[in-house]
Each structure stands twice: as structure tokens, then as C-alpha cells.
Image (cartoon, rainbow, N blue to C red; front, side):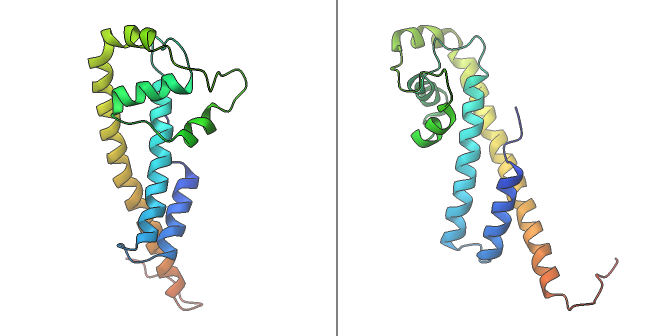
Length: 155
């Protein structure tokens, strides 16, 4: 599975932390929640697409049904439509619930364990990501406060 967070996510997080230095700022929380939501959407969509054997179809409806079964909720319709907006995909077709249930039944427990593992990995990666972004924002703040011409102290 590719990394959960992109360099663009990191840049956005650092910019948000610089713009809103208070940790409890609601705007900062909203910006960070958006970054996490998009990362979660990418991870869940990649998880569903990597399933082998593949589900009976690749419609948005089937993908949403699998997300609900394995993760307890689905990512936003906008994220799914953005991802599925490629030629050759039946983005708006209905899911064949009987075929999906027959496909899912024998492997449901295994897939639920894998989904739980993905959730835990994402939470751990989020903690590392936010700390890394906070460290980068702190370095930028310290560099901005340093008088012109002064050198950083070696320790």
C-alpha cells in the first residue's frame, strides 16, 4: 500500500499550522481533518481496489457497500466520484447486492481484520504525520524569528 500522506498533504498541514498556531484553533482542526479525510479516502479506495479475488463489479455503489461492510462507513461521494471519473468505469451503475453478498460471505472475517489493521496503520501514520508537520512548522517559525545575518547554533 502506498504511503497514506502525500507531499502536498504535508505542505498543506505545515501551511495550516503556520497560519493557525494555536493547537485548539477550530480552523486548524478543520484543515487537518480535511487532510486526514482525503488520506483515509485514498487508503480505503486503494484497499477495496486491491481485493483479490476482485468484487463482482467496480461501481461506486459496490465500492460504497464494501466500505460500509468492512469499515463501518463509506468515504464521501465526492471522493468516490473524483476517483471513479475515468473512462471505462461504470460509475453510476447499481450494485448487484446478491452477487456482492455471495462474494463477501466467505472472506468477510479476513477482510474485516485487514480493514481494522489498515485503520490502525492510518492512525499511527497520522500521529507521525502531524508530529512531522508540527516540527517543520516550528523550524520555519524559529527561522523567521532569527535576526538577519545570525547563524543557527550548533549543539
